[in-house]
Length: 409
Image 1 (cartoon, rainbow, N blue to C red):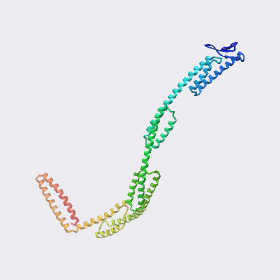
Image 2 (cartoon, rainbow, N blue to C red; image 1 turned 90 degrees about the horizontal axis):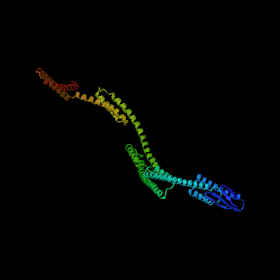
Image 3 (tube, rainbow, N blue to C red; image 1 turned 45 degrees about the vertical axis):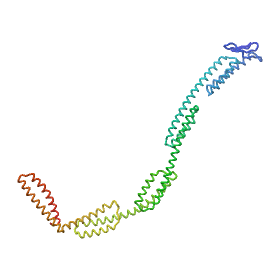
């Protein structure tokens, strides 16, 4: 009979393994010595040790599922429970029990991780839905559209939730995208309509601008071009493919008109500058007539100067008041000389002046006598009143004497 600490072989060739519950039959052996029998079943035990060690490593280092790990454990446990190996079978069972606990812990850990990932995915999708619903109301068509497309890519990268939750969130997400697309489509349809209206309006403006480009009615036409420009700005933009062409035609028509006007105005300005020079020479000639010493000669000379003045065309607007003012000053001086001469040589006017002067002198003399009498009588208030009246009469007398002097009196 042969034996070792974990098993023995009896004289009939039966192999036993020692356990806490007593010896258990492993099998029988008739092909060789008892030592060979024990060695055979010990090797089977070593095989189980290796198999358990590999499974422990797989559970620890790979993503082996709990189900597959449990299946592998059950398979090894069946072999251990069948007692077809010689060794410390209880130690193998202990290792298997620990492995079961490890697998179960991993199962719970993965379950918690999946729950956490699911919660995170739900929160992420709810955030995507909330942002999409906000973007659905945006008028930033390009930016919002690009962001919604990015949200779709983000959604695709997230794990699925339970079917009901995932479908509900996707429905809201899809509805927000559809609402935005519908609003954007309506906006651009309206914009296309507005741009088409703008195109028709601008074509009419271009047609009128081109028809006016050859006009020589400078003032009214320039004013009309300003009105057309205001209408152009108010019309809004046409489609891109039409806007530039219409603008080039519109601006080109204006350029033709204003270039022609500038050319004409340049010629006119040169002519008016020359006219100003001629009128300044005439004004200087007229000013030499002053002061008037010979009224008849001065009048004839000024008439000749004025006839030549009238024959000269327009001068620049900003220079007109000054040069015309010089001529008017000479004309007024001659007119004043004429009026003075007329008063001096008019007998009726002289008589009236002499009569008025005599009456005022008599009144002044009378008032002075009355003042002296009032002073002598001590009537100060009457004297003061008469003196104020005297001042007024004396002023009239002085004026009348001056007029009489002009008549040579």
